[in-house]
Image (tube, rainbow, N blue to C red; front, side, top):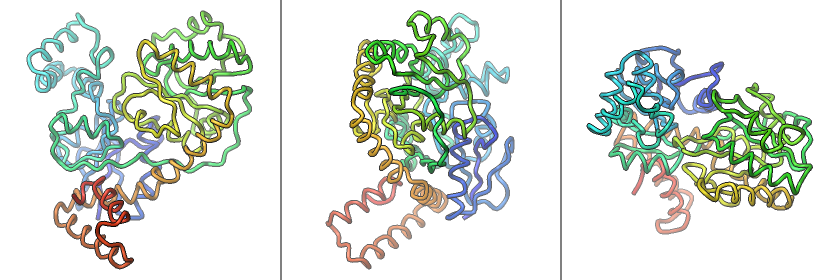
Amino acid sequence: MRVAYFSPMPPESSGIADYSALLVPALHEHLDVSVVRRGAKRPPRGVELSVYHIGNNPEAHGWILDALRRTPGLVVLHDFVLHHLVAGVTIGRRDGHGYLDAMEREHGVVGRLLGHGVLDKRLPPLWEARPEEFPLAGEVLSLATGLVVHSHYVEDRARAAGYDGPIARIPHPAWPDPGVAAAQIAGDPLIGAFGNVNQSKRVPQLLEAFARVRAEHPAARLLLVGATSPGFDLERRLQRLGLDGEGLVREGYVDEPRLWALMKACDVHVSLRSPTMGETSGTAIRALTLGKPLVVSDVGWFAELPAGVALRVAPGDEEVAELTAALQLLAERSDVRATMGAAALELATGEHDLARVAERQAAAFELAAGGGVVADDVLREVGEAAAGVGIAPGTPEAAEIARRLSEVDLGG
């Protein structure tokens, strides 16, 4: 089957570009995948399915939304909250009326009035202040002939928004360990946080919790890697907490080899997010590959990580206290770090295995292209294969097969 694949690709600095660079070669084992050049308005002739990777960044995904509007197809929905994308392709293109129409279409007259407040600069931009309340995913859902999502969270939000098409929930693929040497950075333990340094990544809470941990563990170090968002005064916060000396190691945006080297050097990885846009964290997936214990926010996809892999911290009034306790536990218990790290590696090589994910995505693509005919063929072949190896109906093995089929909307 020939598939037109709309996605950002390297050298774009996009997590979804990295995702597609990883996945496309594995998909080629099952399908004829044609990566569409950036800016193309339509799929090439002769394709049987167009697949659109949609995320919240208008720079990376605005052209893909334009193409989806012309030729509906299967959507790989990386974020459920798409307000920033919609604002980028309306307000960002001097189409204020388009933004007002989107707000009214999904949130009624009140939404349109709020949109006017944003355009008139009487309200702060909703995509920054309250994006989770106004996800603006409706248009994308209306154009999607099927969805691939990476979490129960996005699947549930799509269903709650009224989407009644097929949804395949397939894990984010894990990168293979590139085998790079760990960067030489002191810290006992070394705690790493990767990504843009800002409020939504809970950096203020992380800094305060780490300052408390370091008061008891002076050899501990915090490694912050990523660009500082405009308006976020990192230096002032570090000075106030006394972390502007040896306690903190700071690096900005880094290339892929340096990213892996820095991640490998860390004993603990912290991946916090609130509010969530429904995203899956590529750096958290890389941490699984490296067998590193995680501390995450108890929201969205992050909340679905197994307890043996990640310590979850709820955003809110007790967030700093809970985060401090989690970091102190991992600072003091190397055995806990080792156990969690082993569980992380098992998850990466099992549920998130690249070949396994590619096979499941290919099945979802074929189902989207062929509909009920393909579904019937697949179910018949699975049934014949199961009977051929002695798997009878009602057995635990048959139940596991049924569970796997249901994840790609096959079977009952």
